[in-house]
Length: 202
Picture 1 (cartoon, rainbow, N blue to C red):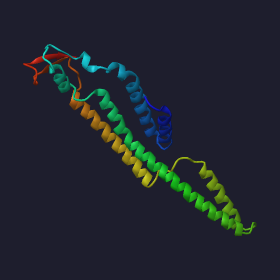
Picture 2 (picture 1 turned 90 degrees about the vertical axis):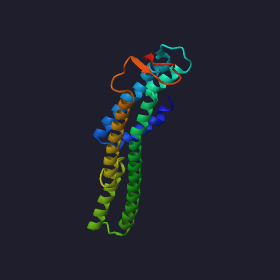
Picture 3 (picture 1 turned 30 degrees about the vertical axis):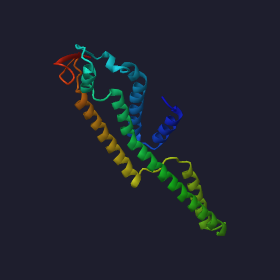
Picture 4 (picture 1 turned 135 degrees about the vertical axis):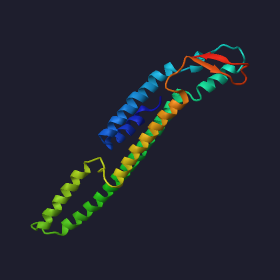
């Protein structure tokens, strides 16, 4: 299935920079979809067309009817859905990492400035104590690996949640439009090269 270490590290980064809602959504997306798709779907839908039987011997008729009944493989459709639903999270994660790096650079600049001020200040003065407090505060902030969710990062987060929701609804609507809500065991086909109306069974 691929390199699970890479997937694990990406999921860990997304998990760090997500809210509670994002963490629940991420869990549902990857546990229920990835595992079901990776483990069960291959076995269940491995060779869908072999189970599609038509009451004709006309060459090519079965393939044409199958293509009309199932325009895209469900497994491929679900993989495409996972890719499109996950993409906004990757954009948000990229923005969060960028903000984290920017904050880290600002922290380093401020720390260097405060250290230079500390060298010039008298140890008994109030300024010296204030600078030491600020330096301790900066050291504590360095331990935090999560960018604060405000400003442009908050807008990106809200946009990524809305985009994921719209894409999710779009794929569910698309699947209903392609396959309907129920799958009928009998499918009637009247396409060329079939000589007449052909009954196909799923």
